[in-house]
Length: 225
Length: 225
DNA sequence: TTTAAAATATGATATTTGTCATAGTTTGAG
DNA sequence: CTCAAACTATGACAAATATCATATTTTAAA
Image 1: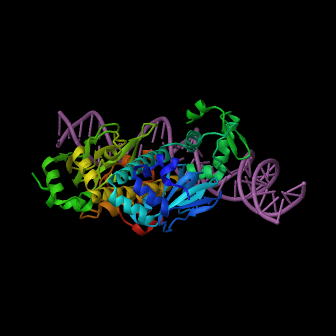
Image 2: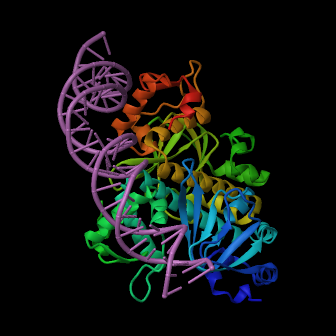
Image 3: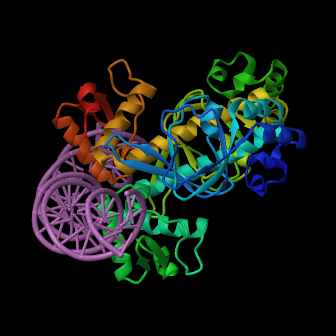
């Protein structure tokens, strides 16, 4: 079994604020899992009963809206913790998590995390700081959704994915999303997302090869209105 | 000077988790302020350097978008704390706060709150829980913005204000917002908000008297699509 | 109370986005 | 490798929303 103390991923999230002893305890009770691309990790309304620490891979957090469409609220990266919010507020989760690539994750049971939240104020403050940042980001998303055009939001989604997840050797975005996923990020109809991406292609801002997308003109893409 | 220990408002926010001693210390260093309707409490990009505890009145939290329009991200009620997020993440504020009615607030300096966040884990956990709830609400706002029509968002905004702030003796919504404010809540042009409110009036869902709005048919308003 | 400024209201029109239909392309299970 | 299912693409049209112009009403300062 792998050891949390020597896990690099921990550097990127609040677990870095745990003591040596706490980490050893966590190591002893965590479960490592491999999750296949497309697999549901947890579903809206479920009791999650713990926290996932993402060692590798990408997943989407979605919420089903009244009209039956999934809205992608966040993309989760290597190093992120998944499920802290539901754990902290002691509620069923309000989001579903689905793997977008093969993932390596560790699951840490709820009571272990809660124990440390009560005992280690450095850890609690660190979780609090992460949540404060998430909230700030959520505010920005709200403003973008409310005030920007679909075209602009889609351009920004491409830039966000480029900046966050980077590219493969041949400069394609390394996270591969369906056109429907893109539509669900920016909150539009799938056909509209496809149409706008086609337009971006015609304008030389991007190129595509199947589902893969390459950003050809980042400067102009940033200026899209 | 009024006493935090005996302040009823404290029941509604995280300050209820402070000890008697901590409350006495806070009482000694807080400042009470009256803020006039329309007055700016703090502006986006400012260092807030503390937390506001809202004793009475209502204010809006806004963020300026790239197109020059203010987006209202949240309405703050009696009992809410203002500015915890910036304090916790130690950043300048990302939102502006403007009074929508005359307000009574207490300002508690940053170092006092930070002290308690380090020493009192009950308090820290309570702040964390409040922030987790705010984040969940923000997720819901994102989904609504992305997936619902302007008409539907406006109907929901009216219902939200009705449920949260209630009505005056003559059943008018007790929080008075301009049409521009309504537009900035739902993220639309002021003319569009006015037009839709006019339509709601024609359809008998609401009635108006100047800026005041009365909900006439809550059931049908809830069904607006 | 008066009156100018601000806010609300509404028409005409342009633009954006959604919906439905259908065709072409890619992908992955067997 | 094959082929059906899933995804992508695009046209035609409908609906929602934005923009600009202008009139009317309300508000608040003098």
